[in-house]
Length: 322
Image 1 (cartoon, rainbow, N blue to C red):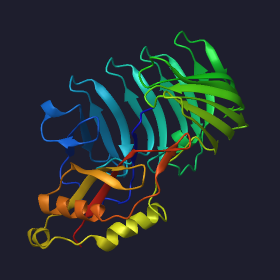
Image 2 (image 1 turned 90 degrees about the vertical axis):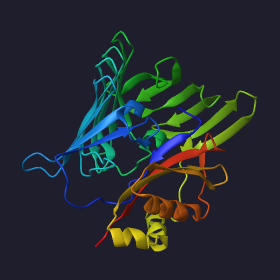
Image 3 (image 1 turned 45 degrees about the vertical axis):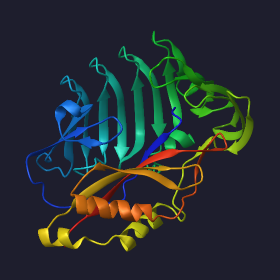
Image 4 (image 1 turned 180 degrees about the vertical axis):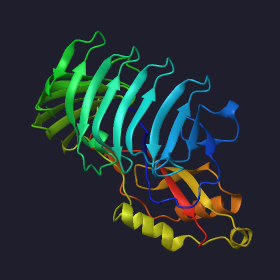
């Protein structure tokens, strides 16, 4: 749990012919693409589909050469995973085995401790369209074990203990019934400097009370957090981009096309700040994408524990010649 949440949007479908047998990308942990392997936190390799398949093969590696991820995607870049995707820790042990549909978790999500033993098993709706389901709680908790393999939740029933990303401390805990949160849950999100107590009834959040480290108390209902959104939703945001982007004349003359990936922060008041190019196509293309995003109206801000929060978004903007 971090003070600055990160959400990736998939607005554009990339089409065209795969130009080579594999594409290689050097990427930082914050999603920024860099030019050299030495500057990267990991390397992504995208290979053309297998025979009789339309899905690209995606592999990621740590700088040491150890496998980081293996999966399949309907897109070359950025990936939109389909089917089973496996991630690994730097020690080579499995970190997760997750099923995707249209780039969204759908089906089983198995998470593992760094020692390789099962940590938790979650189940997402097969028709899941919620890219923020992990925050909204739109999933079932089917299993949860301690690091020694002892059951805490089994077949959707028990007492769940959820750790922070580094397994340093218990971030949240509470009873589970039929895969759903039930009764009183409590937690301590140290990065957010907030403790909380929540009451659930068969997976529905009835009420919550959060206390910040400086003693401020806030109550909230129905949802622990709400992601920011463009007024009118994602579809209208896509229309805003399409209606306002002007293909640069120089790029038209030179036949330049591709997908720019931008990152930006949705502030607590809904303003967009810190707009950066994570993956460049060409300066004239990049500048146009940034220009349009700078002209975006304010968004509806995201909230956590009923309070406004800053959220990092990543969005691909495709420039294609027809």
